Image (tube, rainbow, N blue to C red; front, side):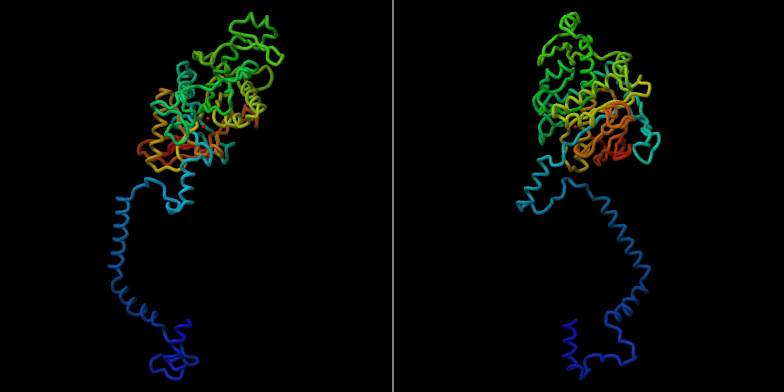
Length: 432
């Protein structure tokens, strides 16, 4: 404004001569239209008016052509966009931290059994408490069969193969499915916990088995109850029992089972349901629920609260109201997939987990779902007894999860997402 005003002042000799400039309007006279207004109101308007239809056709054709070109040539990214210039040390260091270190918790893959294959939901509610899930799918019922019990155990114990040819378990960033020790071995057992309470748990809290599996807890419970050893109150009574041994720990004697959980043979259906569904003499809990609640309390007393929390979040089961049939079971594995993936990478991870599930569990069925951040998304089962382990073992609701956008045409998978469980074509699922 100042520049143009200065030019106008010079060209009009400070308003004394208007031979090369338009004089200002007199009072009451409308202002002279500006050059831009004259241009658009004149030549441009006449051009648009004369060629209106050809111009509309031209621009519609251009938009269609550009859209067709984008649809035919656009491809998904092969890697994520850089945060900034990689030649800047701070940016490069930050990207290395994101790629190589776990800043947002360990992701997890959960295998779920017991949703109806065709209709997983009966009715959607306004929240978890009012959702009505369609439990009791064939995959849970089939778990009651001896061979399928062993198949689920095989799936849970597969990470103990370590970094084998299938790369089942190894440290972060080495391309394995589950995160944990790469050595093909099991964790050393805390013999004191077993002999005093019947709890089978790692002696070293840092031993990473790579999974949380309620089926393994069932084998521990089965071995603990074998021979009814805990009922013996004296060494002589303990010696009379088959498969029992006596040991004095901290001045107190304990009769414990010498049966190994690894010897679990797979129980007939009626014995399996009896093992899980037998009710305590007092209260509403089953003996298995009471066993698990005492185990979690023991872990908390040993300063291993996080282990108790993970067990409650990442594995469990649900019986029907009569406690004579399995309705829902889930087991989980620590995963190693990156925080960010392309569609192709996500599909590759899904296929690897699906092949893993089928190889070690055979025809059990079920679905897989993913928890990208184990520190903030978790499985949560609710019951009429909030806050107890009964919440997690008897009545249930679905996991709060997110899934990869791994798109594969023609494949339909259950995706347990946030508050709802829905069948979504192309979304695939994915903690210990």
